[in-house]
Length: 300
Image 1 (cartoon, rainbow, N blue to C red):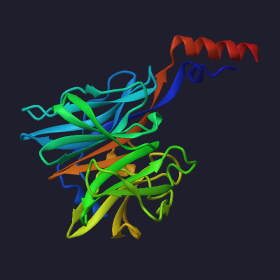
Image 2: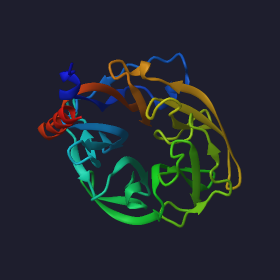
Image 3: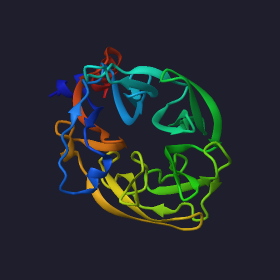
Image 4: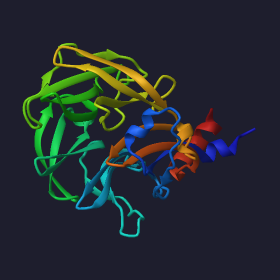
C-alpha cells in the first residue's frame, strides 16, 4: 500500500518574522508574555529569518535572510515599515555566489555597517552602506575563517566579536571571541578560545544589549534540535583573558503562537523587538522530485 501523501508532499520548515512593541530587555523576565504581530506569510518557495532592526531617519528597517528553496541559498533583504504601519515585501540588497544570512547591522561614527554570515566563502566581511538601505560595498575582511552567526558590540574600551565556526563539528556548541580596538581594525583571538562549550547557550541568536548596567547576550539552545529555542545569557565577566556568563531566561516557541516549531533569533532597537519563528508545513514536491521518488518506489 503506497502512501501517496508522503510521495506527493514534503514537510518544509518555514521561518517568518514577528514584531513586538517592547524593548528586548523585557524578555529577561520569565513572566513576560509578548504580543507579536507577524509579517505576511513568506512568498512561495522562500522563508525569511535572522531579523535585525534599525531605525534610520525615523523609519524602521528590518534586515533579514531571505532563503530561496529553488537555489538552496540565502541572500540579504530589507523590509521597510510604511507610513500606515504595514511592512513592504522583502527587497534583495546583498547577495553572492554562496549563502548569506544573519545580517548583523550596526551604526558607527555616522556610517551604517552590515556584517552578514558568509561562512561558505570562508571569511567574515564587513560592508558599508553607500546608498542606504539598498547599496552596500565591502569595507574589509575581518576574519579569514568560516564564521557562523557573528555579533559585534563595544564594551569596556574594546570591540568584541562573538561567533561559532562552521569548520568545527561543534558549530552549535563552541563559542569563540575575538577583540579589536576598532570596528574595522585587526582582530585578535581570545586567549581562552573556545571560551565555552555548551549546546544550550553558545551560538549567537541576535543582538547583545545592556539593562540596569549589565550586559546580556541571546544564544541558541539546540539541545534537542537546531533552532529550537533561545537562551538569554548575562555576561558576568569579559576581558581579553577571561569570560563568564550565565543563563537567566529561556525563550521557547510557546511565545510565538502559530509558529511553534522553533525560535532562533531575537534582536532589538529602542522599544522594539523582532523575532523569527518556524512552522512546518506540507509542500507539494516538484514534478522532478516526485517522478524520481515514484521511479525508486516501483523499482525497489
